[in-house]
Length: 226
Image 1 (cartoon, rainbow, N blue to C red):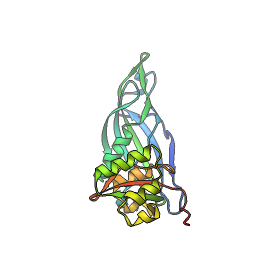
Image 2: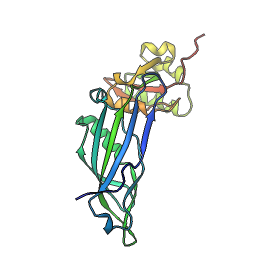
Image 3: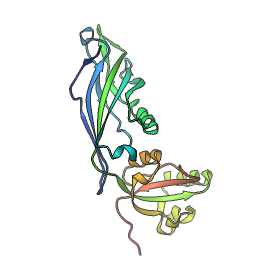
Image 4: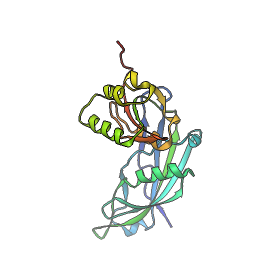
C-alpha cells in the first residue's frame, strides 16, 4: 500500500533560447512511500533534481508522457536503486533518464530520530512544448588521438576557430568550424543529450559520430566574417 506525500513537489522548466526550441515541463506529481507516514518522523522530500535528457523524436510528437519510478532512497538522501514502473518505452532514452534520476537528492526519511532508507514512488509528467536548436561550431577528426589532442588544447584556452581551421576535416573548417543553427533532432540521442547541456561558449569532449570524432562548441551569435 502506498501513501501520497505531496500533490506537487515542484515544477521544473528547461527553456532554450531560439525559435522552435524545446521546452520540457517536468511536473513532479507526487511521491509515495512503501511505509505508512505514521511510522516515520519525517517522510522523504525531493530537494534536488537533474534535468532529464531531450526526448527522442518518437516521443516528442506526443503532447506529454507520464513517468513513474520506484526509488530506493538511502539514509543520506541519495538514490541507491531505481526500478521503472512506467517508462517512455524507448530503451535508449530510459537508460539516459535513469542515469539522471539516480543523481536526484531527497531529504531522507527518519524514524525515531534516525535517518532511514526507504523505497519511494516518484511520478513525473514530461510535457513537450517546442523543438530545440543551437548555434554550433565543430571540429571533426578521423582519429581519436587527434581529437583528444585538440580537446586538450581547448581546455587550456586555445582558440576553437583556429584549431578547426588547422585540424578539422569538415567543410566547415574554413569557417572556423561554424555550422550555424542546428535542430538537435538531427543528432543521435546520446549526442543530442550532451549538446542540450552545453552552456554558451562551452565545448564538448570528443563525441563519436559515425566513424568520426567531433568536438562541438555552442556559440551565441554568427561569427563576423572579414
